[in-house]
Length: 286
Image 1: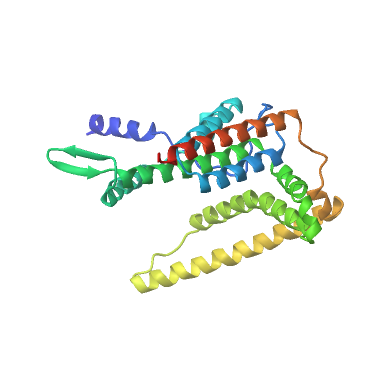
Image 2 (image 1 turned 180 degrees about the horizontal axis):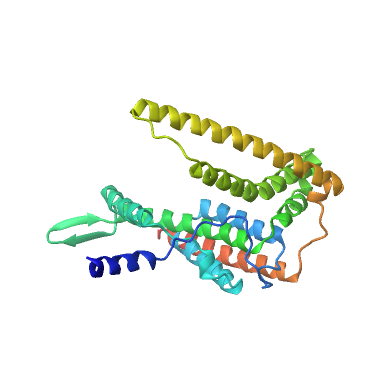
């Protein structure tokens, strides 16, 4: 019994833990991607989303994906920063690929007298690749950009809209506060949930009593979370007032540098090339 159980126990203890999703926490480094202006990265992300909206072809996805991989390599993002993909995600992708084949379409594959159109499956793979590309770009911005730089960058980019009396600075301050508070609140909620689980509780005898107990626990957690959020908001308000007001959150002397113009030029070149190729591929001969 002992010899049989020990390998299983050793296998269970040596099982690698899953890497969690880490948001809005930059990876330490001083690479060329880290030194880029935050506004440049935001422009690239928005430009990529717009370009993929109008030209969601494989050529566009391939070129922009190659640029994203090159940026990840230049930023020296470690493999440990990337979250683990759960098995159910791969199962859902495989299931979507199989069910999308029902739509048919070219190309058609013949096997044993059975003709299967893979057009729907290819469309599903293209949408999946597009989604992964946008998520990778957002993660790259999160890994290489300090949260404090996003608000001033948005205020600088939105300065031309002040002519239309749009409160750009107020929106930038609101977003900056939200980005700063988001990781802090997540950590607070995790601590509250862990403390709640450690509290001893009696197991009700009936199912109805268990549902009532779960409802009370949910109400207690929500009330505690609201109290913690208000306390954090009060502390953050005092800190902002002591540092000169909310206007400091949207003010920064950072501006585009030569490296930023090079990055924008590379993105514009890749986007223009993909548009030209996609347009030529869709032109039918007369």
